[in-house]
Length: 216
View 1 (cartoon, rainbow, N blue to C red):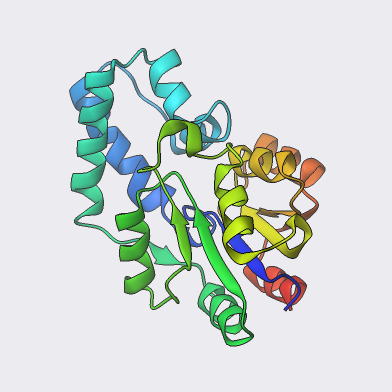
View 2: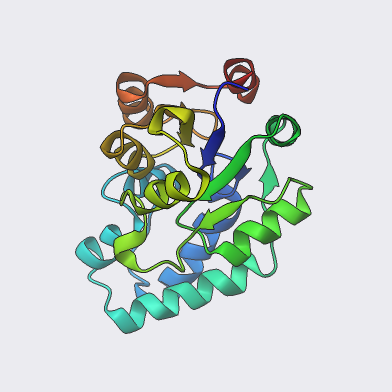
């Protein structure tokens, strides 16, 4: 066990969910809220990467607070009927981390109820702590609040934990708290995302098996 605590992102890091869940759910919301707007899956990945989903909706699509609530309801309805599949090898990593006495936490822009649902469906060890979209905006990543709380609860140094994430908000969070960062490159092959993550991550892997070898 290389790190006492692994802090996982959820979507497109642990489960393959953007292409199968979040993107089609967003298209359903657009039919109601912005029927004139179309967006490809690759561009949806790009917007989630930078500036981030909320910023895209509010600044580029000019969604109001009420419209954002409708978008969330569309998403909740979709995820209640669909479950994302965990990437092959992810369960083995988590089971080994726990078996060796390690800690698993999740910092995600999904809700905690959805994260727990995906973990249960994929038979993954339940995380020790979850920080999801239910947190107040100022406590969501890229805020370092989740990392601060994890360190405080488990008496950890920043060097004793590692963040594994596929997008920039996770990188920003880790960088701002001086935590090692692993770029998860197994969810997409979009050049600008891959180049940023390869250049800025402390470590970058395109296969879950490579992450496993690194962690243990």
